[in-house]
Length: 113
Length: 112
Image (cartoon, rainbow over all chains, first blue to last red; front, side):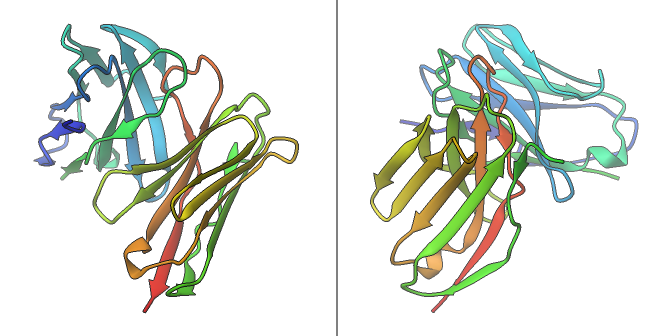
């Protein structure tokens, strides 16, 4: 059974640009959550999608957005990039019905210069 | 004060020793507790998942949850150098829809 796949693995962007990250969950999983991981703040919740609907959202500015497609694949977008957006972005896949286990992908390391 | 407190370490132990990790939390609504292992530049790997209080064992790993004390633990028996990693506790409340509260992570170093 394939795990959670995140693409790309690495990105370098310039301040002010926008970026789109992709996450393919485990087959059969309908929930995808996104997290930002930085050395100073640790893992922080961005948002969660289930069956193409955002069910939960963290405390991030509106520059951070996401969506989910009918095949459960999800994308997150960050517009007007800032230096502080440099981080490891992780997505987690779960069945989404109740509080079941969540499995993470390898992450996308975003560097903003 | 953070909702989940976890000593960042580093925690250094000799090979074969028992590794003892713990987290405390303040939100009494948390009912789902997880431990993840994260190697450098990799995504977190789920080790243990526990609902409510009690113990759970899986191979060399034992997870304990004491909801009355708001305290969770992870024990790793017969530690190996390959266990050197950062261990993260995570917890969530019912209907939190993918939102886990993570500890800061404890860096563990197992020396041969």
